Image (cartoon, rainbow, N blue to C red; front, side):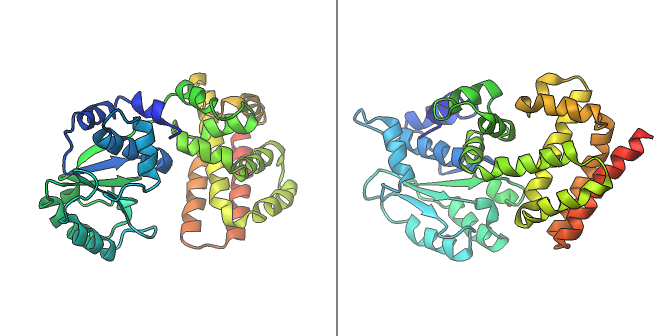
Length: 324
């Protein structure tokens, strides 16, 4: 459990953790968060508060939940999407009496991936769940969840943490560095996303490619060099575009003199340099829709090479037009 202290300090989690400690658990919950690692720990800690007894250390119990160490804590699906057969397996098990605990917990990962047929099957079980069962749906988002499912679950939304809270937590595990500061800036306030950026150094490498492109691609003659750099990462172009958006969003904030809202805090010198080069807030605001358009093209399987070239050309074009 890396994030127990953060979870225990969360105002959004305090009420249901208090209920769990008192043994008051409902039949269905929907935990919502884009940070899957934080979501895993939040659910594990909730279950741990409900089942911990005889002075057991709650975080040890939560770790055991995360490891799959309880017979009566079942996890679905087997794959990366919830299918009808996964719901069928849950239904076939839910009416059996718990063997180890006094309540069985059914964790449904990536619940937002379930299609309508799977959700409708699950709905009947949510409506008629036995008192011995508690179902926990874990969702990155809820737009795809049927209203009837939502109405039968208590919603628990995990909110982001402040930059200061997150930095304090991360310093327990990692030394401060350029990668560390980058991880904080792209985390959106979520520790699991920050940890992922720290442990996958290629994420920082993708950011550096974009940073260098914006700083050093000054004319169309430079495009060939940077286009080749982007093409070498052809499977991660969407990620490169994400980084362009991050930088442009911060340039808008910088131009509005809202320094406290800048996310790329360790790159403030780069942002100031880009602004002096012509990447004003106005330019950034005009580039952002072009990036959104490039992402859409990728989603519709457009040529990666064509998307890269049109993106880089658009960046230069917008900057040049705004300078005139």
